[in-house]
Length: 351
Image (cartoon, rainbow, N blue to C red; front, top):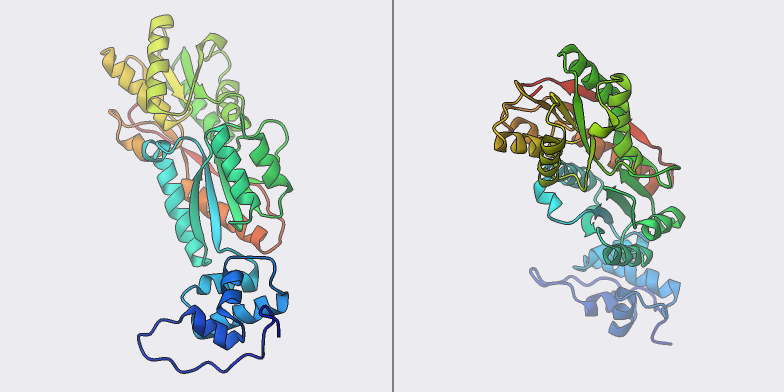
């Protein structure tokens, strides 16, 4: 009989307490050689389907320590979900939203017996590596967290054409949506904030935003300015190079140098707003008496600024739960849908 052909399964022998199951045990139960078991574990193609199935059953029945491999062989699944972050890893420590996303997604996936793998894709080289990793079948699904769509064409095209279910967090796309997504419903929240600014009597509002080339980046600004025509002049919209506290601080310094007559600022994220407040403190400008500031997100940083931020609350935890819920539909071969999560104005001392 050829080495790769399985003999009838042997009856598992009772093993001594404390003794680990070995490849030899699996080989004996499956009726094949150790080499055949090794080839199956390493994923080589020159093993017949019948033999591969016999080895998988032997691994499961003996409690072989690599039983995750046995499950993978039996179900054609890896048990892994990729969390692809399209930003430098340092953002995980700067933006509290990422920490909430990771925590809740990990907890939700654990209930489905899946593990989360963090992959960064902020450069073209990283995006190419992620695309290769996904293409080689190391994960069963992908949660894509992009700040902007620039430079991600190959990765998005791969995910769109792949059988692996993939869903985006937020709405980073331009034009048509190549993937389903879960995002905060930015428009109602931004409109509420604009009405709040009008009620407070502000007359000249600057906007600090980022990634205005994306649908998600545009929506908050468009909803705010559309609800309060005349409050924001075109020359008062400043685009920061990224969503970060430092970028918000730099943008606010620019505004103070070029447009010192403003009485309020809408920053399209709490990080940008916190940076704006830093610059105002630096310039000895009192918030909100001289210049009011509001953000968007209601992240942990909103209650750490001085004064605390007026902002628009989006539930990142709800976004995370919806991401996993839709991904589960995709894993079960269903059709995933795009979902929006409600937002709500939260008034504090800064505006």
